[in-house]
Length: 459
Image (cartoon, rainbow, N blue to C red; front, side):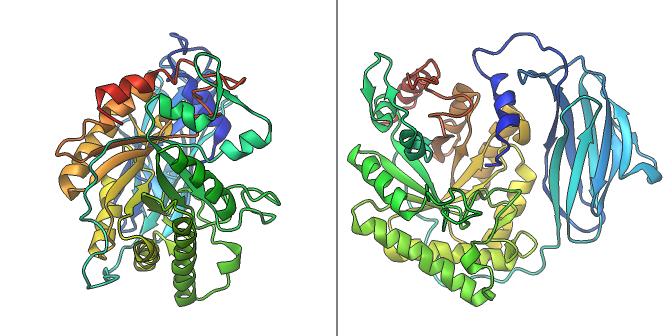
């Protein structure tokens, strides 16, 4: 997920059961793009909605601030609140909010680029997004053989949690307590409240200076092995999330691991295959093989940059296929998820998935991130998951979310055509709408999940 912790922390409060009913003074600009990948043909357009929230994250519908728009890169704004923008103002202009809203239409240029979109106002925190303009080219299949994934049946539903922070929290001395104030393993408490799946992220070398966990190496293979033992001992299923980086990977950054940075493409592809295979085999050898694997994290802008950027679709497809092949070489039963950060962006989701399928990249599950600040409304999410399931005949799930817990789960478990899998909440032990308080005691947020488990027969 996009790691803008404090900004989303503020925003998430507005979606909690404890949020205030009325908004306060405007504090931050929110930019919600409906496409972050556009075709560089001089014609493709994207809708970007702008709103304002207060310090508690509540939308201020009465805001009338003057918003300054600045575009860097090959794109231009052609309309604002349904009014044409003069040619000499298309990359830098200002417009007043109407009822707290500003609707922008952005048009791509003809060059491959990363376009920076900033929305600013006096005394408000700036809102930003990035748009990648691409030229897809002619697709070249990664294989002409029988697909190694994509036909698997998943006969269970998922209430899952990414709790990769757990070893770090425990290292700081944090303990966890159930609703009766009994101290227990956090994994056991989650299980008792309806969770049946745990997701873990893994980085190549998080211990390096510029890595996720300098010197300590949290979320490396050794820590993952220890956590995998705990997950399986608790009788839960296990999703492994390969970031293919030494640090966070998301739509804004997909840094190549340092030890791969000087490799040519064939050597890089081999290294990705061998690394994935080694991790999988090591986990299998200790009896904790993952039940599902993400080949990359939020990869709608690609992964392992610059080799696998979204502008290099053939290379990206080859890297994904190398990861998929390695997983299936070790354990053919492990299911494959493609994870994109496009909860409410249907057109862009189609662009990505269509281009991967044209290149014969096989997968079983479409995983979406859904954070309202970046991914639209609940209606956008529902329309998207239903459409993707109907179009691609794949399982669809929300692989990351935090706020709007009941509503997101209701949508995820109601995908038609027997394609609903469920959800993974992101880091519920300590961040944003945590299901434990600061003393580690289970709170009201956790009480949502037994209800969801019973409602959708998750076990």
